[in-house]
Image (cartoon, rainbow, N blue to C red):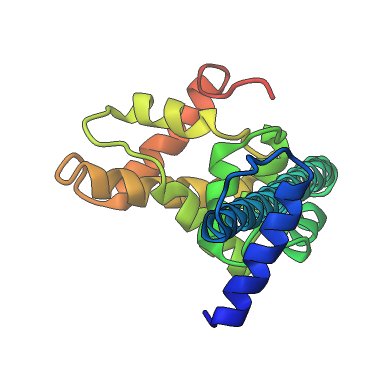
Length: 219
């Protein structure tokens, strides 16, 4: 820093100190040193104030960011609730709404996971969607069945677990597709229990016809 600048700051400091009482016996050098000290103190206080202002500004930005995220979460939850309601009224329209709202990915795995969790979903609606014969629905059904673990369960136990996650539709063709997927999954988890998936399928179908009230649950 140049001599003129130091002298200027010292002069300002002396002027500031002039408002206070100074001993009359101070030499010019002592007065200059006191002035420089006062000027340095004043700059330090200004720096501290600037830092306080910056911290306050950053704090406000963080709070605003938190509020923005909270509003986004509230909006997302609202849309998700609306999507579940639409699904319960019309499964395909509900899934389309959730995909368009970027709440679901347009993949069979993501949709299957959504149906498997079943939060707020009508089990009859889940069964209707899984029973559709469209190629994409069949892929969702396959992914949905893969989420079930049937290892070391007997057939009735596995059926009860499977049918707990949805309600069987009324159409025989839909039930047929579901039981075929179930039989494939059960035989995969329990290799050697049945000679073929066809045997497992026929027996599963028979068990359902005999014990449907024990296997299905209310929505």
